[in-house]
Image (cartoon, rainbow, N blue to C red; front, side, top):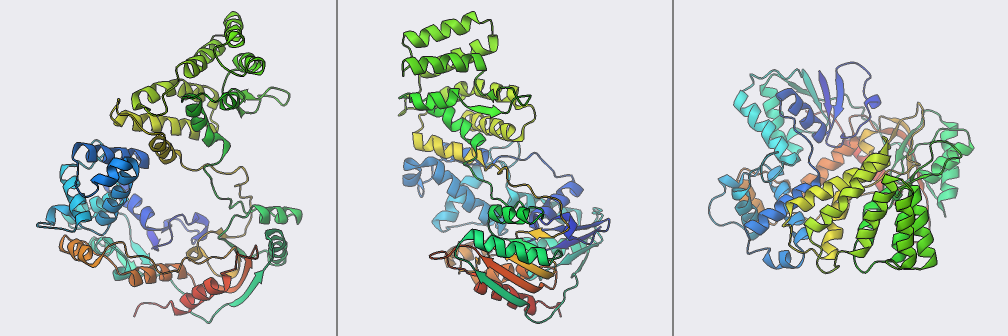
Length: 531
């Protein structure tokens, strides 16, 4: 097997490769996952919210003085931030057990928590991607090159020493195991012909971009911005859509959980209750059929009629609606009506939201989503969100009250983003990518160019860098890290020979295409083979 490895190649389409069997284009995460499979180290994925809950529990059981004030005010955000720092430190190759003596406060806190944590799928802290990489390295070191990996060559897009953290060590171990480290071919040439179009609005830019693509069917598309408007312009010219529409937490199906908990929390908002009752989650089985609601049709109609007659719950109209539903001989509708009635009759106090009580109220929602889901991707995503929240709540102290803010933070962490119904790429021979590193050459249309080349804030201060290095870590300077990303943006190709940059929007949305394209062009020109 031959692997083309680049720092920015995670997510590269298989069709962007050479098209031959036994060749893969992988980034850091892809290579680690491949090696985990070859070494028998795969394990179930763990939701990020679950790991935050585990770290929060560690902080509760083993209080630390340095983050104590922040933890008292905002425990979830504090645990999440400490966990990010912990993962970043492990990613450098730092081994807390090797760090003796006094440490800077951040690292000292991480070290103390690491000493009491049991990292593993069945432990007190699920492993992160950094732990996966460290485990692969540890096994390769123990095997001493004796483990057959089935990899003949790893073609590198960057110098091993230019990569951060443990990556030079991993590549060295692969070489010791008989894997040849080489480079993909690069074409070194002059700057590409660059055209920058600045338009006053997105629709004008989309029309110009569509004309460009119609004139050059072989041109690639580098989509750095939402292509919804561009897709419509392409459709008007009979061309397939690109479908690079960003996911969002505001998709309808990702609002089900929040709406349900709003209804279950005092004071009861009858407008939210009506929205929950009237929520339709699936189209009908036939064109003329009524859409499927979260609440069964009989319960929905009767309870909405009661709210229309008396805008409140518990009154004569509400009780009469419940009685009519009970007479209807529809067990599912009756169960739903009773659940809704319990939610609004005994709502959760807004100032004392207890994990056990919240989790119990979510049981019906999970069952209903499972019943009506029928394989629908959006509803299954909503069901997964509910199940993750139940798991997280089960890890917290059952009677410890949560603030509304903390509960919303937990819900957001469990949620993820939902895909847009317009995020559908239609069949085309055209190469489409969202990363400059994955552009294979030729003419390129860059839609919505942007640049993230602003200087990055150093994550670790000098004392922490020294402490990490003493514990086996390897921290690149901000300049070296940015150079690594810059070289990655050159890709494993020669870069575009002709680049057209469309900048939708005027006024305050100034186009950064010239600067961004110039940086890419300079990097392409500077990408040469290792001497």
